[in-house]
Length: 261
Image (tube, rainbow, N blue to C red; front, side, top):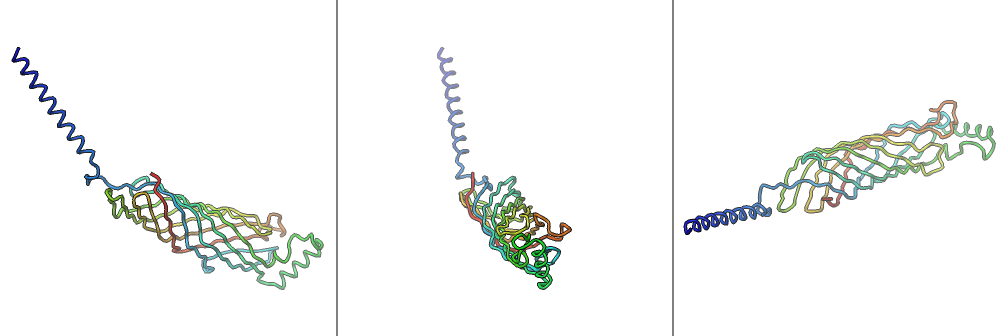
């Protein structure tokens, strides 16, 4: 009987020691702050975006005609203001979306003013004063074009430095994407407001610290639209047309914001 009690006591002691040992192992494994094998992982992010964009007429191609009369144009623009967000798929691959606004101003004037105003006079005589489909502002004037831009694409990055303990990351990247935009002519123009298309590419550096991030770099883009009079004045559709095709190169941008998770 004493032997059985002794054996039972020994077995119980072994079980308790094993349980205590298992508890110690579990506690050590949960001490994440002391571990050095955990890496910082990039997170989804969202924040405001600004691009210091400037259109140079040397990089603008265009066609502008009214009643088959070619015109010259000059283009001005504002910065691009908007918001951007990214979602990491891999540590070296993200997808992103940028939504922005830009105002484009287009001043136009006839290449041959004498012929253009003589043509306007003939049209006015034909339709009568007040009923002519065009007026002097159509021959020489200014368009205010409000543009909503949507850019989506992907970036490829190198996590240059990551630190889990301090929640810090520095990641240079290159990116590329497509652009779709909707233009809105706010002046009394005869042209329809067209959809714009294009693409963009560039490079930057992204830094994250806890729940905050900042990203800066340069962006190059190509944008294009083509429109015609809502009610055709010329015998052919392309007698009243406006095509704008321009590039911008190495435009600096900046975005700051918060990480989403």
